[in-house]
Length: 517
Ligand SMILES: CC(=O)N[C@H]1[C@@H](OP(=O)(O)OP(=O)(O)OC[C@H]2O[C@@H](n3ccc(=O)[nH]c3=O)[C@H](O)[C@@H]2O)O[C@H](CO)[C@@H](O)[C@@H]1O[C@H](C)C(=O)N[C@@H](C)C(=O)N[C@H](CCC(=O)O)C(=O)O
Ligand SMILES: Nc1ncnc2c1ncn2[C@@H]1O[C@H](COP(=O)(O)OP(=O)(O)OP(=O)(O)O)[C@@H](O)[C@H]1O
Image (tube, rainbow, N blue to C red):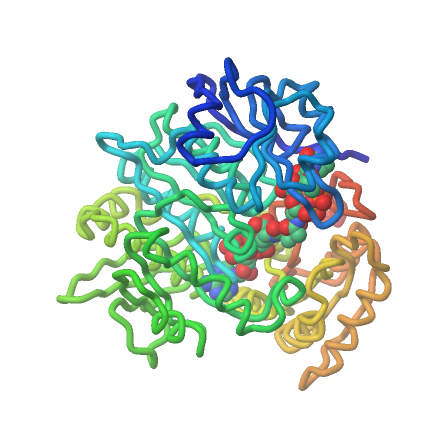
């Protein structure tokens, strides 16, 4: 069992900034003495504080960060920024305390100031942001991949990993807290990164995590049922994504119109210069993605834009949705000023886009035996697209194996069960991250959903997932496919708040080996 927390990347050579200067520039109220206090960093978590940090204590859902002020001080915090309740809790800390009404709302601008991330630079790195329900991680990886093919040093921040050039760390949140993300951007600048692709979740926008960042180009992938534990309904979820396209956050945008009605509605609301793209023939858009050839190793597509501009290339993944993601990435680059023919040439030189997306319809099986794909999909729409892609390369049975997240949007579970049942020949319901929920009751809801399908396939309930993948492999032969949806790249399962080491990719390979494949 482990509670291992992945590291946070921040500048190695931060320059100190006087606390008094921060207070006067932002006109902040404070308690205690500011003189002689210099800041070299900022953190929202006491366990990540480094010497010289401003510790920002926010009121969370469970605790108030100010409860951890002694720990932050022990680790080297030199000042505290908090709300009036936090200031009361931390009054005996002997640290200078800056008091604001909402520390979370102040965090972006102050982190930006501490790390100087928006200061004038001669030739600043381009910053790309991707939002939407599905495809954010994939589009961000594809952006970074193409940018590398264009010869740029890249930075990447996604649900799966964060990269600075060749340095990689595993992610915690999809979009880190503002203090972390500005530290990451500052470290990227130190490392000579020329272009950055950031995945931006709805939660990040609602919780001010990307405040203080001005994106050069932002992209919207699609919207479908997810996260209705955080948002009251689809309407509220829709509005949570739009702020990424606000004029104070982004210069230009690209809106994919594939998801109806949300794509067009998104385009109707955008208030920055933008262009549109679609991979659906019946939808009018400025740019079109047309899938020309689908192979087990890649999908070939043509991207056509205004004035007859066009390129044909390949994305090294299965499914039209990955062509849609790749098209979006390319148009975002064009909007940022990259020349389409130069992009086409760079991709041609390499035989298409070069990118490795961990746990996104990743084939983990070899040449013999059933094909096994491990995928991160955890919404009905993701299942629909991924199952369609897998079906295309499966002469035999499609076996779908999945579980659902505990303590996350429970309203999508029936639809997940139904869509999985409709797209598969054999359905195996198992566990995913139960968190603090009863795994058997999650499985029951999924099974109830599967029963709503027009036709129910052969269905099994197998727990735990280690047994479920072995069972799936025992049912599969040459020509069959197993799609294991949910775990993707992840290297743990969350069981009652404890991260248990676990890799679906390794478990699947082990099960195949045991079965003699
Ligand atoms: C619902 C939500 O967003 N919760 C976030 C929130 O937690 P919280 O309000 O419960 O915090 P808390 O535990 O009460 O603690 C309050 C404060 O004390 C601090 N603290 C706490 C303990 C300690 O020892 N020291 C310390 O400093 C915490 O850093 C926090 O600032 O603040 C924490 C600190 O930043 C986040 O880790 C936590 O994200 C949790 C893990 C989470 O699961 N968030 C999800 C909903 C999320 O944001 N997901 C999106 C989208 C994913 C997707 O694309 O599907 C994402 O961007 O990841
Ligand atoms: N354009 C798309 N349309 C529909 N489904 C997609 C699309 N792109 C990816 N998917 C599906 O969604 C899953 C998650 O993809 P990806 O990680 O790129 O999305 P994400 O938006 O980053 O998800 P999350 O918000 O959960 O991190 C994929 O494994 C695939 O099943």
